Length: 193
Image (cartoon, rainbow, N blue to C red; front, side, top):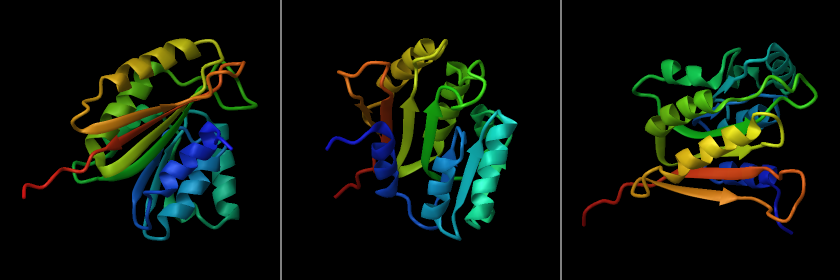
């Protein structure tokens, strides 16, 4: 059976994240990805999570407390574009995930925007470890969603092939704007013989 964007995103992250890794949840939302990442990084790892909505931060905090995983996560009530000012030159990020669109069951006028998303992606590319991955799930069936989708797709299509692999995964025969999964993987440097 073919996997949904969500199932595929979690599998792509599970393949590479190890205990001790630094990872990013660029859109905390209802906390499901944050909780998933906190379990993968173990006690010695760290998840940095962002969301502009206080409701998202509160819901995620409750989920993490219930699972006794809050100590593994730094939550920030800010947009993901703040990432570029929070990472030091030494910080190496193993993985990141973004769910672009709006927070389900909330104010649909509060959406992710292409300018902030691209700022966060550019910052992450420079901090990504070899074989590290950035997963972007683009939900675009809302006002403003198509322009963000187009901007993100145009950007990732032009990421240098010599340094990164970029994959797009989407069901193309479904109605109602099925989400698009983008996976960006940093290539490992080849060593001279």
